[in-house]
Amino acid sequence: MAKYDYDMFTIGAGSGGVAASRRAGSYGARIAICEESRVGGTCVIRGCVPKKLLVHGAQFADAFADSVGFGWAPHMPAFDWAKLIANKDTEIDRLNAIYKKLLSDAGVALFEAHGRIIDAHTVEVAGKRYTAANILIATGSHPTVPAIPGIEHAITSNEALQLPSLPRKLIIVGGGYIAVEFAGIFASLGTEVVEVIRGDDLLGGFDDDVRVALAMEMRGRGVEIRTRTNIARIDKYPHGITATTTQGEEISADAIMYATGRRPNTRNLGLDEVGVQLDANGAVVVDEGSRTTVEGIYAVGDVTNMLNLTPVAIAEGRALAETLFNDNPMIVDHETVPTAIFSQPPCATVGLTESAARKKYGAIDVYRTRFKPMKNLLAGRDERTMMKLVVDRASDRVLGCHMVGADAPEIIQGLAIALKCGATKTQFDQTIGIHPSAAEEFVTLREKVPEPKAAAAE
Ligand code: NDP
Image: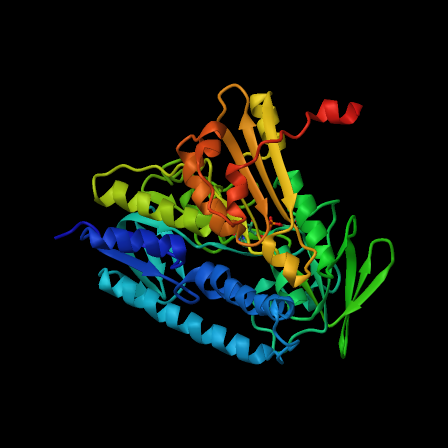
C-alpha cells in the first residue's frame, strides 16, 4: 500500500497549481488539488482573461471613431456595459468548466474548499486530513490597499470587473499594470478617468521611454494623470465618493479604484507552524527549483518571491511536475521574460531597460523611433508608436526591446525569441522587414540615440 494518500497535494487551482497538477497527473502521479474560490484562479476568473475581454470591448470605440477617415459614415453605436459584463461572465464560466474537466481528465482529485498544511506531508481540507509525498503551494495573491480612512468605500480590480453600471467618473489610484490597464478600458468606454500616482511617472521599473510615451498617449486620450498625489481619506455620499488628497484637494467621482499592488495569499495556510519561510512582503521564499525552506513543500506563481506573471507560474508548475514525476529536472529561466501591459495603447517589453543595461554593461547603444502608424494617418488619430532597442556595444547583442503602440504584445512576443537566442543588432538589421507594418521598424533602426552626456552638452 502507498505510504501517502497522494504523490502531490496542490493548494490553489490557479494557473500555476493547475499546470503542475495536470502535468503530474499525465505522468500517472496521484494528485489532489484544493481551491477555496473558483477553479482557474486570478488569471482566468478575475485577472488576465476578463480584463482582456474588456480591453477588446473597449477597443471598438477606437475602431468606430477611426472608420470615418476610411469612408464610413460617422456612427457611434450605443454601448451596453451590462451586456459586456454578462457575456464576459459567460465566457469565464465556460473556462472554469474547462479547467475542471482538464483536471479530471488528468486524473486529479479536486476538493473545492480551503486547504491548510498540518505538517510537511499532511493537508487538511474541510475537516479531513490527507497525506502526500509532496505539497505544492499555489495560492496566488490578492489586491492590497493602503489603510486610510474610508478605504472600505474603494473598489479593486476584482469589483471593477463586476460593476453593475459604467461609472461616469472614476478615480484610479496607482500607476502599475492594473491601474493603467483599467484606466484604458474605462476611458475608452466613455468614463472620465482621473489616475492618481504618488510618483512622477507611471509603470515603475519599465524603460523610461515607455513610461513617458504611455503617459503622453493616455493623456492624449483624455485620462487625467495626477502625479505626486496621495489620497488621505475617502468619504462616501449617496451618489458617489469624494477623495481628499494630502494637500487637501477634493476629487469627487462615482467610484474610486485602488490598484496599488498585490500581496501573496499566505495567511491561514499553516506556513508559520510548519516552518515555511516568508520574505518581508509575505511571499514564500523559493529557490530556482520552486523549493521552499521545508523539504517536500514547493511553491509556484504569485505566492512566491519570483516574477508575478501567469506564464511564469505555468512554466514553474510544469517544470516542477517534470522534475518530480518525469525524471526530467527542469529549472525555469526567469531572465528575459517578455511582458505586456494591455493599456490603450498597449506596451510590451523584453530584456533590459536602458538604465539597467547601462548599469550592467556600461557601453550600450540605444536606437529609438517614434512615428505615426499608417492607419492613424487616415483615421486622423494623433497617436504615435514608440519602439526602442538597447544594444551591448561590445558584443552587439540586443539586450532589450521596448514598444508602446498598437500590437506591441504580439510583436514583442516574437522578438523575445530572438533575445532568448542572443540575437545581435546586425542580425536584426539582416532580417527583412514585413512591409507595410509597424513591426518592420524593429529591423530598420539605423540612427543611434546620442549618448546622454553628448545630448546634455548640445
Ligand atoms: P504594480 O506593482 O504593478 O503597481 C502598483 C502601483 O501602485 C505602483 O504604481 C505603485 O507606486 C502604487 N502604489 C503602491 N502602494 C501605494 C500606496 N500606498 N499609495 C499609492 N500608490 C501606491 O501592481 P498592480 O496591482 O498593478 O499589479 C500587480 C502585479 O500583477 C503586477 O506587478 C504584475 O506582476 C501582475 N499583472 C500583470 C499583468 C500583465 O501581465 N499584463 C496585468 C496585471 C497585473 P510606485 O511605483 O510609486 O511604487
